[in-house]
Image 1 (cartoon, helix red, strand yellow):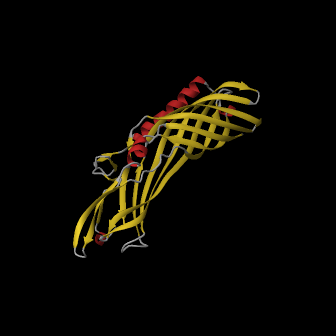
Image 2 (cartoon, one colour):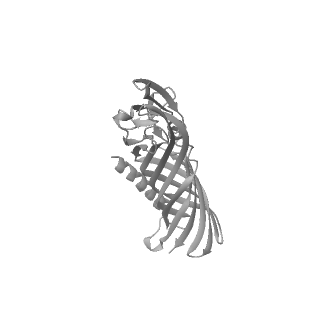
Image 3 (cartoon, helix red, strand yellow):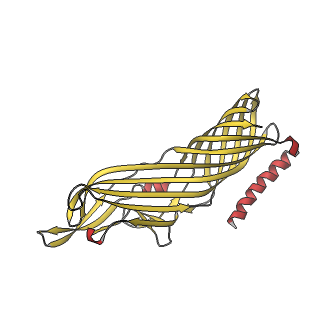
Length: 294
């Protein structure tokens, strides 16, 4: 049902464009445009909640060579917001007339954040020094359909507005927690936690403006800028987590994120309670393009 619903948007755009600007197939002209630029999605729950979630835990420490006592701790290792990251893709334009074009495109975006600190943690009966590296990576793949309309055409220059519906087909989120021990029984050893999750089917709308400069009749350079707004609300599903901790490590951790009861990714709040996390891809995009006409 969701796929059929998405197709209706495409049919609607095509129908309106052809009704307003009827044209025969013999008059159609095409262009292909490689795209490269930046995209800055908000992702507030991820950046300002999960990225800032603490790492509390409890570990056993051996006292006087016999008794083991519980040692409670909380480690803060926040990740920086991914403000901008590279987006690349390709767009095909169908010229309906001198002013209007239909758009069809595909693109992908990927960003990451890493933080490394030195701290202490109870491990295998001792309070051990360690290097704690936390890293996260987000990627998204999308396609879009829409229209462009020229508002200024002056010799070899164009200024236009554009509107598109964007479908984010695939979002991948990966987070790694690496603990490299520098003292105690595990000196020189490492423990790693890996979390993965996905989202799909996020519908968005983008409004933007752009400009184009023609070098000749078949080649031009252009710049687009626009704002994308979500029409859907989504979460990171298919969550899974794995680690290589052993029973003998005598350590119990509450990770910054974990698989929730619904199979989706939940984050740890400041009160030590896991909450459902939503993904919001609203944000600005700016793309450079080379346009090939034929």
